[in-house]
Image (cartoon, rainbow, N blue to C red):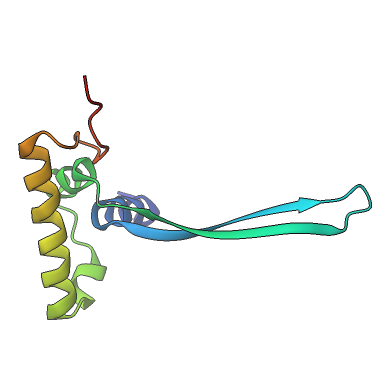
Length: 98
């Protein structure tokens, strides 16, 4: 499997944060407004399953400290618990109230 794809699957599996920047300009290309926001993408259980099924051996896991591995384990267990309670779907999105 392509190394870039493996990294992308791993990133989805463990979750990640990104910064989104929105800028608004005037007609003369003068910056009027700039908004920087952080967005968290939680671990995705489908990506975890994919990693396990394909036997991906990601070097990032090998380089993680014990505390990072414990934090990852707890996040994944909490997400699995939410899924079993029916609070989120397989992609870790909140289920809609009916």
